[in-house]
Image (cartoon, rainbow, N blue to C red; front, side, top):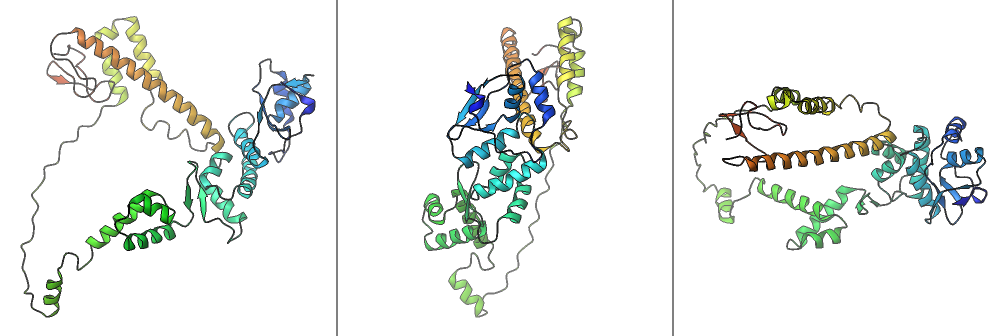
Length: 357
């Protein structure tokens, strides 16, 4: 707990200042609010301006806080990142103004890092960088979100790699990468392109004697028969059944249709499954700062679905072990009554009108 009187006001990220209505709503809440973030060396508020104002409005003198010990530049970046993920989000104009300051503080950071901090797109950050940083003051390398340094001008680095490979073709990828200041993947790609260019050169594959005879006209014209490839028979395409089709077929299974638990299970799946590309129209027009939050929600839902799939496979495997005959596979083709039907894994499962044999 910190004394509210000991705190310095934050460096406001909002062009319009405090939102009085948001402060009033927070003051009327009867639940514990998240702790604010305070810069320990200066005791300046990093995140939580409206929570502090709400506490003052309620007559409180102390507030829960988390102390941050980084420098002023890191504190500013943390404030921007925190205000794009929760609470009262920053407007687009606020985040664009913050991006200008972050680029001034961290010119050697990549566009994607600045974008993740401000909730803007990498293309928007690039446009802001081009407008605000004068030519010639751009650092030659930038640090990405993974902490690795990469050259701004990739073509210069690849050209340097090519020169090093020509001088020392036996050097390892890591040796060449360290010498050129690029990643091993860049060296691998340059080597691959050099080999392709060598293989597709007009005189590739000719020996010195053949070149001499060709130059003196001693090589006779050779007539080669055209190569006629054998016709290939394309494999038949078997379309995967739709999710709704799978659930409709399962709903006709007597073991599900004639029991309350079975009917409830089918209704549960019908109401919660996500059809292919069903989300396409939902994300259009989303503000970037909300996209990060919704992405985390989608990740948590995906984790729950994966856990459910594992549990269902365990149930299916234990039931299969009790039966007679060949055990069925956990994924792939399950056959019953001479037919193969699509099941919840959208590949195949036993026919709903007969047991697996």
